[in-house]
Length: 183
Image (cartoon, rainbow, N blue to C red; front, side, top):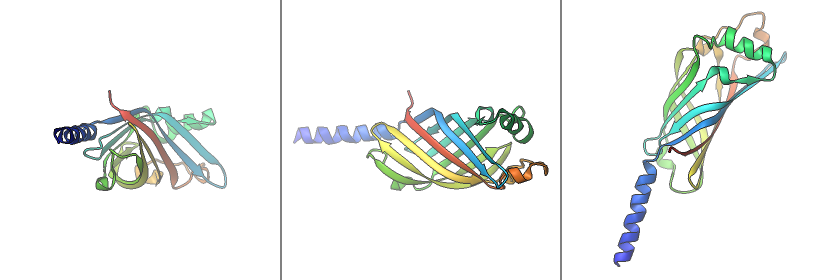
């Protein structure tokens, strides 16, 4: 009987310790895709830093704008200098929470739908956003994926009329992060 009580106590302690663990990545991926009849534009950033706290549901992202890579160097130059002004506004951020935290069991391997709500700052403009995604819990790792739309106009990103036909008014953003316990 004592053994059973000790095993249950250890399981509860292990579960509590796990739920207090912060998960992190410094190699998360954020990509975006703009599709128009004139031209498609795609960029990928593989240097995204993000932290996830399973106990509170807090999620934080920090993205260096200059780390987005494009197929064409000229696109990358225009993106950084003309649209994002990345010398003046070098980061994009998200700070929020998983709103359906009670539906996700971080101690059990599986695939869980997640809803995030929080503040996203792009180009120095903060907007409150809600997005859905998926969390895959496997052993001591968490894979988070999401796809959502961003309108450059919402973040006061000016698109010159000369190239307006080449840039979509709503751009698809994809997130893919594999988190591991913070050491």
